[in-house]
Amino acid sequence: MEWTEILIIGLVSSIIGPLALHFYKIYTEKEFSRLAKKEQFFSEIFDKLEGFRPQRKEVDKQELVYGAYRQLWLHASDETIRKINELFIATGADRPTYDELEVSKQNMCEMVLQMRKEFYGDKTNLKPEEFQFIFFG
Image 1 (tube, helix red, strand yellow):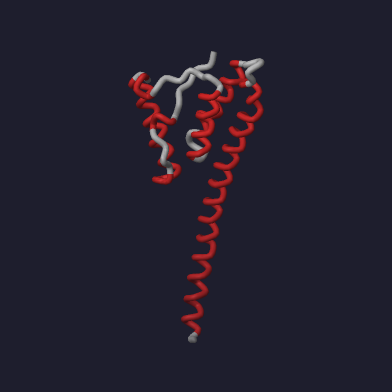
Image 2 (cartoon, one colour):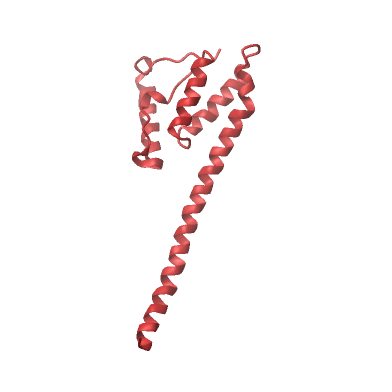
């Protein structure tokens, strides 16, 4: 191997190495940020679940859980969204069907799904009607 080949390999390595490290750092920071948000919203839900006890329902805590749930629309897995939906249904929350929603709320559901696809691409199998608007009371 000639010294020019060694020099070229060294130059290319000195450029590619830092670039690869830079892109890896960006990826891991985004992933860490996403996990931190999920953790925050999961914690909010766990902290307020007592508001769903049949003996002593607390609408204010239920509303806080619902607020965290809405934030998870962008961050949680499909199955987590579905399980939280099941919790709300099981605890008797009032939930209009998708067809009963005003057009503006249907548009919001579709917008949330599109935003979610920005995060996950085609990996999400949720439908607009799975982003539930619910009412406690």
